[in-house]
Length: 87
Image 1: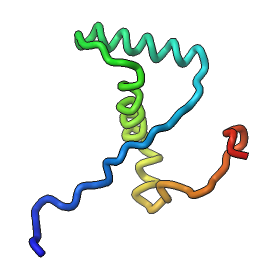
Image 2: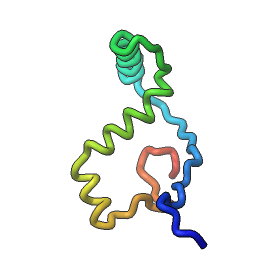
Image 3: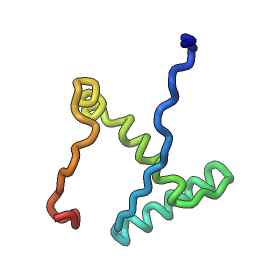
């Protein structure tokens, strides 16, 4: 087997998540999309912006990054949160 410089690519299978947000958050996201269009001259749907917003948020959270480096599990199977509708 060859030792390629490029390692095996990570799983890129997208995951679809459906959630309900408040009217205030919905309006704030629409406002952000408007400001994005004004800033960059390109219109993007809120649904297209959200994944990138989440990446920026997670990458900017130093406590989260530290916990992951120290072996904090990235996912917890079958964890149910109160009020999540999964009770």
